[in-house]
Image (cartoon, rainbow, N blue to C red; front, side):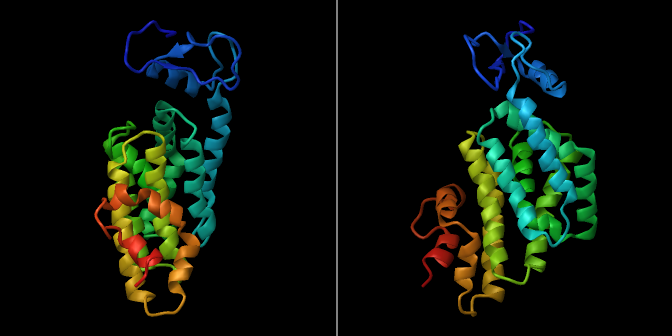
Length: 261
């Protein structure tokens, strides 16, 4: 690596374009973080790094997180999709680093604190993002202060509480809420990271979704169909065993919305 350190966190640098033998273009985690902070090219060949493009994506995600308001349900839910697309093509160290960038960005922190103080529906509609970031922290895969980690935990709790209290007034929200949690689990699974906390939070969301559905919508015609409009069966099935285990009929989401009695 560039610093000649012998450590277990040395990885190849992610060049935007490959030309020639780049096997020796490697860096330890500390040096990678410094290169990312400076938005620098490869120190050996000066080729543009992937993160120089990713910074634009990250800035867009930060801006959307800060900018969207209560009532922009689809836009807020799509934040998790933006993160999923990013996580699926990044290294584990980059995922950790950029999750930290998101969770500690001063404007994002201020928006989170304001939403927590107001018990805002904004948290409900962006729940997947906070589930994913909290899972990275809780499973030891991104380094945050205790205060930053606790803020993410509170955001997840508040999102679920907001959903139980104000479920959006339409069964679409039941499907959308679980879809966000499922995407958080799939993001972790596809990137080879821990699914432990993401799955536990998805289970909480799923149990909440079942309660809300039974309390408000179960007796109404076509409500199951409305849930399925926002909950992709492939996603629900892909996380089923991770979240609910492998026993027959163990998954109440599949049982309720895709195999109704």
